[in-house]
Length: 618
Image 1 (tube, one colour):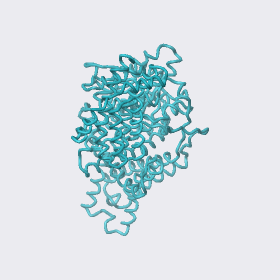
Image 2 (cartoon, helix red, strand yellow; image 1 turned 180 degrees about the horizontal axis):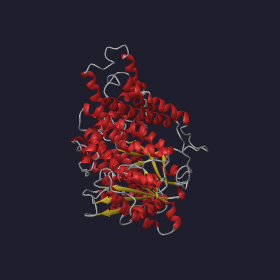
Image 3 (tube, one colour; image 1 turned 90 degrees about the vertical axis):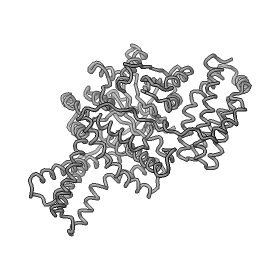
Image 4 (cartoon, helix red, strand yellow; image 1 turned 120 degrees about the vertical axis):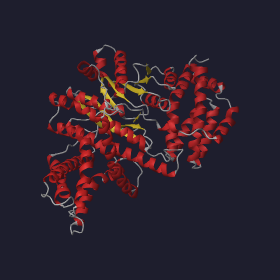
């Protein structure tokens, strides 16, 4: 379990000197755009000069902002821990057709945080989502299912969260102290919280501070080390998939995290859709003012954060705790996701007047949030103006850097201003990210991240186009697990070979009851096995997919030992087979066999439920 660092001092802040240096660095960009001759001679055409000045100003602001992000990221602020038992924790998980991931998510949350309540919001799923949750509810009274049906269902994530929040509030009760101590978190259906999350959220820098109304934690990509993120595809497509996944992990853990750290200082921390936590009393304040906490924009979580700020509550960000989610290894799905997010941010710009009227933000906060809101428009403007200006300069023979002695200077300036600010995130990711990445790989990551950053020029125009044409509906993004291949014949044959073994051995349970002195204790052991099974097999799959020897051995050993303890002979035999493949370094074979092992585990769980748990221990 990762532990929080205990510090007595508050995190260092960006001072005036750093701000001045950042502004000077940004201002130097005027050399590249206005005075280097790259776009022609300045002062000859007024309208072209105006365009150059506009592009220069936006570039200077962007470079100033990036410099501040790099600096605040390097400060490494520490978050002090606290006692989670001072609060009651409620995790809401909105779901629609999430059968491939929901069991493991609920299992992991309950196994990691025994004191928390998990509220699964089934938004009229057409798959087995509700059944999976019901099966877990039978053995754990801290798991709750909120079922929504059409026409109320499938009207947006915000509506689902609003309906669930009311049920959580009713569950907490009318006691004022209990309501003040209640904290509601929101997880994606594939979201895993780090072990230290509640400990850090309870600390004096987080909910231990009465002025903090909501907290966002850092986001990691849990499949960042997957060697074959697209199992049915070839080597080239898997390489592209690995690149996209790594870039998403690097983005969220470096530049996005730095943005939130800077927002801690400007008072503009944004809430994300995964890993956000809000006091129940703050949600009630929002309901009183707006009728409901969450709105209907495509980024309802960011909208929530803005509304919290407008009520003069403080949003905070904790980097040392994280939530893990799936990254997308498919370019088209990633483009769709980011276009949707960008359009959601555009929709939130309508809230700027109310934020200004609330006077809840100082000058730095207003500057930061306006820059973020207008960023899509700035990017599209640059996309239009920069190629146009350069083309005109080339056509007119006025591109001053061609054939000039200053060509090297211009190239060096372009490197410093257009490449370096983005490439630098790679060594920072290598140094502080805890990933096993070599120096050469880090260099390649930097070049790859530069390309990934310019990928924004694809989805910002699409988002603006959709917003201007009133297209606000989106299809749900598919889970990676939805594309897993069918169990190969040799794995199915091996599964058939173990059918002669008993799924479970009642004699083992009788002996276990004698050792423990009570059948009820055996029932608790079986309930724990059933509850932890989805998380155990998910951990195994993640470790095997990453070809990680130690985590893979630990994960399969956990399954093998627990199966032997409860007399699950088929499952133990399958675990021994998978363990042998892992020891031999055959991770492709082990990855295939995990599906067979999962099927064996599901039969074991079904028998335990039927024979010992649902009807009571015989």
